[in-house]
Length: 115
Image (cartoon, rainbow, N blue to C red; front, side, top):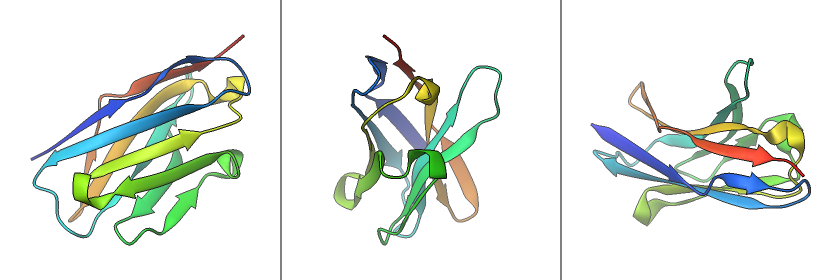
């Protein structure tokens, strides 16, 4: 079993920054995919960014150049550095881990961008 615990959400003004963290525990295999999705009110959950165990990254177009995903393999932790935040980035952000065909989700952390 795998547990994912997120932290780092909150309220920030437009143009500000936040850093999300997600720590994975349990049975973590060497090769996996970790990342972040988000879900805004009334909208479907969407991919934000992913990173493989080898460090390859992928971003949704709307966050390219503003968000950076990284991971610490020794700590089984993935980070999402979010800069130049916009009101449309407001959502619940969910961490996920995919390994051996199974996807695990965190409980979600709220990010609100508002003046």
